Image (cartoon, rainbow, N blue to C red):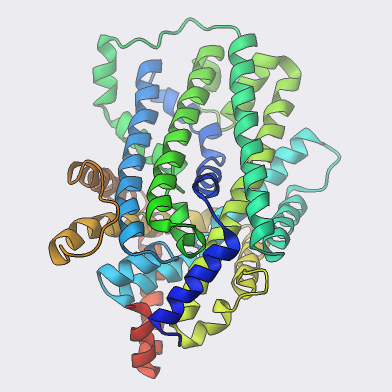
Length: 454
């Protein structure tokens, strides 16, 4: 087991090797957030929310809540600068067992399931653009393995690939938005507020819609998983979290405004593939392929971001736990190859068994709970460790953390009421992690405690 001083040297060497700046850290979070959610959510929202103004307010509220979370995580990342995200934060704030449960979730299916979903979505959209292509399953496996190979080649290769793929993603989205407004036919719709908006914004459909909008913003905390690879993390992490979340908020507003401005609501209502419907309405028969190609290109960056950050949780756990030490080993290129391969194995299994959607449904509650505890930890640390060095302090404290906690609590209550079996299954996964932790703790308590509380 390495000492804390050794861990510090390791972190500094990783930062020197990777050279992750604010730009790349922000790119990872942008790529992680912008998946397929924004291209599929609107159809369900306009079934019950008929005001364009209310729909945009819904996405603004979701973005503001995500920003509140990002501001709080910025303080944690600056005060407790180590890779691992919630694994690191919860271990330090509450107890190593709590952190282990969050890490257990991330290391097993927390990243593998959304990668599998994104990979299969890539295959489905690619098949729509190129009908003669192999099946979505084959394409999904291919893109997951290809992206993993890039990251296995080394930090520098992954760094460049992430930047290029994210820049391409954002540029294509902006180009689509500009072209859509330029060539689309305006609908009889108003974005100005009216008397009906107050009723819609305060109604149940708006609150339920916010639950799913928040899923579209998930990933805003991405840079906290790779803190050891980031230059000057105590400044870069808070900046990257805020910048990325704000960029995505603007992109989401523009995309939804475009869909509403150019496509009749009745054509989108109840439709999953809203972006394809809008693309066809704007650009004609070729519009579907244009949008399909756009989504495919964007999903590559999303898969890359999660392929990068997910294994870092397992890596840090390996630094702390002797039983997982193989996952802490890094190649000459500075990557945890065994951790990347473990995640790739999980992704492959989920794709082949087509079980990723069920897994995603049952881990949503547990993932939300982890974020809730992390942000709550900002407030607890202010009371329990007032002298802790905080290079960055949460802007708007305590209002911004309270906003995030309130909305997140509502989401958890909603999930427990609407998906009780799946939510309890997610908690059962955490419980399994707790059992595993205590078994390892019993075998080598001093080693485990030393690593996880450094």
